[in-house]
Amino acid sequence: MLHSSAEIQARIDALGPWFHNMELAGVATAPDHFLGNYPSVKWRKFADVIPHDLSGKSVLDIGCNAGFYSIEMKRRGAERVLGIDFDEAYLAQARFAAEIADCEIEFRQLSVYDVGALGETFDIVLFMGVLYHLRHPLLALDLIRQHVANDLLVFQSMQRGSKETLPVEENYHFWTHDLFERAAFPKLHFIEHRYADDPTNWWIPNRACTEAMLRSAGFEILQHPEDEVFFCRAAGEAAGGGAVYPAKGPSHD
Ligand SMILES: C[S@@+](CC[C@H](N)C(=O)[O-])C[C@H]1O[C@@H](n2cnc3c(N)ncnc32)[C@H](O)[C@@H]1O
Image (cartoon, rainbow, N blue to C red; front, side):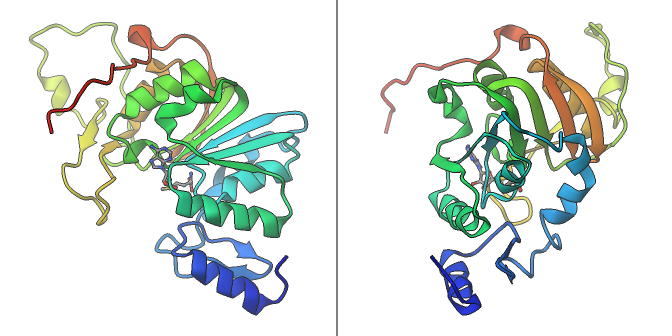
């Protein structure tokens, strides 16, 4: 157990740097965050679309980072909250934050690509701020739909480009060209090197692309409470047969 603010500050410093700014017993983890008081400023804009009483519900927080959203779900009474992240340093922050918040949450090191290994489904899946960090973003959505999303999905992505959407046709003629010049056509922008100094920012969708990918993975968009946030329900199969599981062979190196 930790006690004084000085002790808590020392643990925060030892576990840093932090992406989530949280008040742990009055001590801020990332007071100089480049996005302000993040993710509180984001959470405030969509908190009301998530049921306030999560009694009896299970929640999976994918890419949980320091556990800000996991803790919020537990505070709403969720029976079981599992936070996964592939970065053990963030999970150590999450365990510490949950301890200080007095929340019983399980945190496990796992990549989104391995959610099938969990062998269970969840009433609410949070997939926030992870899609654009993935080299294989649609595969991740397909895997989530196939293995863990039983009902609700709360999704967030950084987006760039047009915020408009176009009606989607069932088919386009081979000689259709002008459509691709339109800013509102679904576009997933590929970042070969870095965006915001981060080499893990691989793909940044525009809004139409985010929506199309969610639908294509078998999610119905119920609400769009905030520019980057989509509140969805699992509502059908993923198109194209869904997730793929490439065979692992010997590499050439
Ligand atoms: C921008 S942060 C978002 C954190 C939190 N979900 C939020 O919305 O504030 C991205 C998080 O995703 C995690 N992440 C990135 N790739 C991942 C993967 N393949 N599997 C699981 N977590 C991943 C990172 O370690 C990081 O904690």
